[in-house]
Length: 453
Ligand code: ADP
Ligand code: MG
View 1 (cartoon, rainbow, N blue to C red):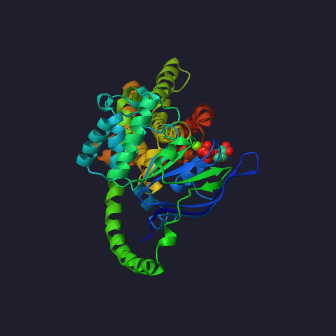
View 2 (view 1 turned 60 degrees about the vertical axis):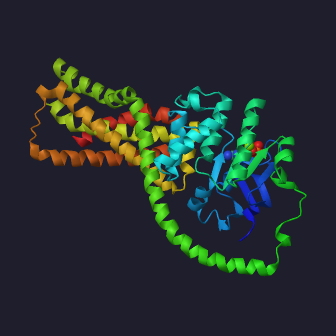
View 3 (view 1 turned 90 degrees about the vertical axis):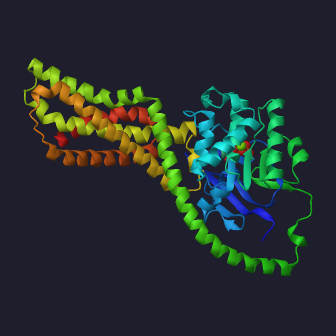
């Protein structure tokens, strides 16, 4: 097997600018990262370091070139690659609705770790980084240095083979820096984790890294001076190792499939649990969001206007189903779309889930299931409110026999709304979503209510 954990060949990235024109951020870089080393990836701001890390860690599609992680193509098997890597992004992408400890535990669960292992590792890392006494605080109350430590602790939770750190010490005071280096070197020594470090400080990799590459304007301008290890390995050894690697591969595939399935199931459940936990913490916001629109609809059309004689007495009966249906639809769309668009555009919270060793479809399906649950619960809240206000005016007779049909309808509406929400959440920007609700959805609600009825 090769001595390199990472082999990058002719990697390129071209960004397509909005107003037209292309920008080549990474222009055909090639380098190898030896197994178990601290590797320095240096360059000034704008050199293409973060862009390169995003491609190496499956977060960004390369325009060209090849990335081999542990001998396997990252583009061919992104899920397999994500299982081996830990990523500490340059920006804060912690899950703000969760406590520090929960950030670590959920991360471990997304990676298929057992609850027991997750708890033990969380204790260990919280202790090492001096966060134990603040572990139950929400991370939004964390200082920059503490957040940075937590991000690193989180990326170490699943003991990755290679840990990518994007300018981890920028803006940190010396005290935090010391702890960070100590823990990183410990991980490197004890677990053999390869450290891929980007920085624009010259002295850091000089002190820590054995090999390094310097980039500027998307190109490599200098490589580490140590002679290439590959050139020293005799050809015969390479051949034998390639053969034994194939046998290994077959065993790996069978075991891996079973493992991947278990991880996928667990990660999916953890993602749903995470969303429901966040929602449960903000239960009044949820009730308000679900009940407000139907309440206004019901009050106006089911109570005030018929009482004033502006609308016929039969109107509430006609509109009843529509109001319930449309309220649920809006709750479902809102519940799926708003968190998604916020996640993707502002908070970066979803990045931790997108880095889990599962297909991104799993992340989307988890979001959808939460939307369905929310919409369904919304229906359960709206129904009694409607009956309470319009009760005397509605001439809907329902027996026990209708309950399965009612539940069936509620489920179908929930499903439709979550699907729409997913679509809306992935194509719309936060500024647009604010305008979308009054400008687009309200008229749709009224038309839709008539349709449902
Ligand atoms: P570094 O991390 O080395 O500071 P980056 O990889 O963040 O550099 O950026 C490299 C270049 O690509 C910069 O000129 C930056 O402005 C540009 N760039 C980064 N992201 C995007 C994007 N999403 N769209 C267009 N240009 C981008
Ligand atoms: Mg950067």
